[in-house]
Image 1: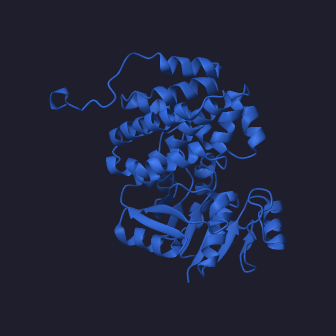
Image 2: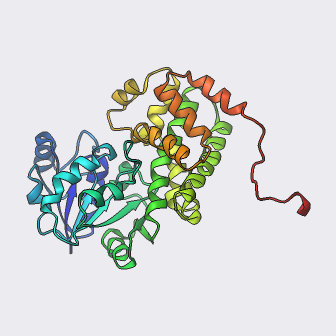
Length: 338
């Protein structure tokens, strides 16, 4: 049994706490909000963000960060991506050398263009930072539905430890050394999912959705490999797998926000209606900036960013995508071998 501190009491942090507790581990949850702490300690449920997933009685919550962190075998950092750095700064004084921290949020920091593991390592250099990512909805994990995910780490021993802690008969965990590729896929798929939702909000059909998913993973893999990620990662669970589930499901806050934007709402109005952090909004500008930095063309991601931040009508964004210059689908195919 492991002693685990869950840093964040949102839907994903709660679902993972539910899963870890049922694996026999001792879990304490930290939240900055006393109302969330009281809710978990009295109702044993995150009834606002993950209703229906009842936590075991021995899962407790606290606003005391040091209490939740000290003496733990593993810390799981599950706050939304825009708050990763500020939370890591609060955590740093209580982190021992070699402390395992598993980052489970998805995003790229807008100002620095760093992955979240890089942000954590910058603020807590003494930590051993791993990543857990894949096609996972908290609503399904919190009900014990079959799920597959990937544990990424700088060394195989750490990745296998994270795999062992999380894995069971309904939560299958793979390992990977490609933390960078995993995180790029996780962050950029949220932007493409906003685009998929926008298409849904405009009333477009399955043809448009299939095109967005297929060309979206092309953009993600082109940028990801330019940034040092492995091409194989983007054809796996943290690439195409995560993109499919986020573009297709109504559990996806990014898709739901995109639908509202396609129907004419601003991104601020959409996030207010979704009532959760829509991480694709925060990753869109960073993705466009990375595309320019690495000289990678990102037409879908760029149009989503223009719709979000420049007031471009959603229908005009789709039209401009369709009317781009003629292209070959796959550049490496040779006409002489047909």
